[in-house]
Structure formats: C-alpha cells, structure tokens
Image (tube, rainbow, N blue to C red; front, side, top):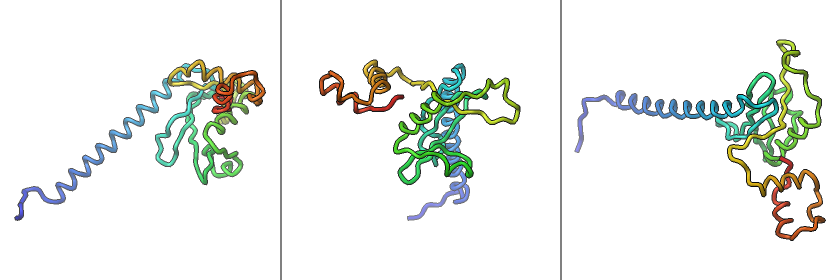
Length: 181
C-alpha cells in the first residue's frame, strides 16, 4: 500500500531541520543562561573567587569561572592522554603543568595564587596589559558539611594523619580527601 502526500519530501525534511535547529537553539540558550547564572554568582565577589563547573563547550569537560581584576572570566580545562591542564594559546600550552585530576590542578593554582606575587590593582594596569589569574576562594553551590570543612582544615595542617591520636575510621575519612581546597 502506498500513500500520497501533498507535501514534498523537501518540505518534510525542511521541517525536521527547523525542529532540529530549534532544539539546538534551545540547548544553546540554556547553556548561555547557565553561564550567566555562574557569572552572577561571581559578580559581587572579590578577585580570586572561583568555581569549577561543567564546560558548556563540547571539547572540554570542565571550566573554571574566576573573578579577575577585569571581571568574571572562564578558563577551560583540557583533558588529553589521561591528564588535565588549563587550555591556553599554542605557544604557552607545552609549558603548562599537567595533573592526574581536576582537584590537583585547582589545588596547584590555588597554592600558586596564595604564595605568588599579586599584580597591581587594575586601576594601575596599562590598558593593553594582561590580567593575572588568582584562585584564592572557592565558591560552593551548596554549603559543604562541617565534617568536610574540618577534614580540609586538618589536611592543610598536616600530611601525617596516621600519626594523629584518632580512631582509624576517622583517619580513613581524613585520608579519603587529601586536598587543601
């Protein structure tokens, strides 16, 4: 049995494409709204405030959104050959340090920001100057449990958790997350 339609195959295909484009447009708008919400979180934050989020770009898994002297900015995190590193211009890319995890990457740049020299205030920078990235204060979408915050504080203080006079179960909890951020 065959059916005849007054619509041509081209018309039907065109409608499918416009439905597909509408879906693409909707997803792009949704991603743009998500990025705007992340930027709003940082809008009144101090320089160095940052958050790690899913990347809206297909080629990258994560993005660091950070408040700089020039305003909120986004840094893509690249994943290649089992390692994470910040995305950068081609000339600098080979010089960037690579990490086994995103948390190690963030921890490294937080440590650099805390110990490195600060740039002059943005009002003293020339108009064509680059902006220094500082990662000093993470923003959380939800407040971490007090238990976790205590674990981070202990891990900042000592790397010898096994020597502490604590029950083994608590030592195991402390060593499950050995990062300083």
